[in-house]
Image (cartoon, rainbow, N blue to C red; front, side, top):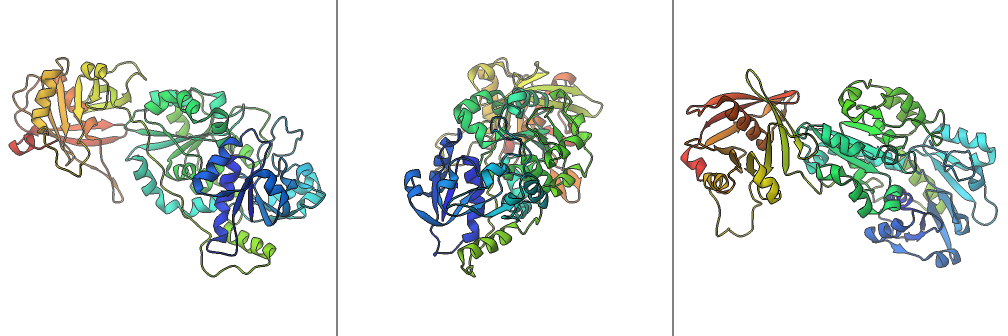
Length: 544
């Protein structure tokens, strides 16, 4: 069996299908790169990453295969000898690509599907009956080999939905709202039309309330290269945005997400099929989107994002149901696609499927952000019962009440400018350290070493926070209570955020409390109760 791909995204679609042959030692799985695509450079790297055996194109053309699997009919694919199976490439057929010489949806051009010679299409697997109708409208002959199978990639995502909490834990999302952005490729994509949107969102949305993630089409990654892409996205990445990996990880991020901003790319339809959660459009107009396609229908029914600063109101304007209806128009046989495809492929091979092996593999956990902000402009407002705070990565917004900096994670200039320095516990080591700070020892050292610092806070492994304010005779402990969200769910605040709230309160009140004080720490819509009390001797001597 030969898996023939022109690009990385085409290869990833094939990899979602390979498990239908799981456990079958009668089948040898080979890969080749079909030449002619501008985005083929990353395909070979992707094959190498999964450990696939690659057949050079000239050698592949010289051999005959029992089955040739592809997810794009373009290029020199017909030159490969064997029974061809064309698999779904994305969620439906929503775009026509200028320059391809056809008004047909990309991937459904009859000129590419009607072949003469030795390599006709034995099976054209599509994901919805409407796609067969579109094929027939272009040329009835092109629809004869089409069968509605469903979408194998969606099936993996649907089966992986119970792992949502695991994915969010891997991303360190916590109680924040995970807002994902998806960008397709080409001149009408989100990143081409609104390249500053990720950075503007990172600057506007408070860090303790929102986490950002970006899903970029593999073709756009190939066009730019990873280095160029990450340099362009550096302001948002430095603010903690996650850049999802192009294979599998993007789908894990969509499962984990609470809300989505989309252009006209089909990734949004997978998100809609996974769950009915808020989504908004960042696509305005263009020549690529096909009228009455599932994506066109979806974009007509969801709110349109204007300025980045209006994102919260725009997300609240989403009405449940619009996304689900669009997904139903793109995907049939949800949950049964791989079994249906397995039956068809083994029938073409004239083989009986093995009893062992599973055609379904769950999605892996995504990676957390490569960069996390270590310095925040903290906006603080004293309330009748405590403090309302909003932390944003330094430099993204005008300075607030104070600068809070994580000691040991930020540069010297920021450290010297901090009003609040905080220190997180060091990673545990396999060997015992010969030298360590006590919590209060470090706090006093920080205040001595950095004269501009007004408070120093050492976060203890227990989650308590020892805080010493300049001019106060003793150290305090900041103890933040978890918030009961109802239904058995518990939310926890970052101890560093609570330390900023206490720091702001102590400065505004000008008091030196010698007995416990209860404060309310307002973070977005949540209120966390904070107990501020003098530290005990044991707490001041804990190692950090």
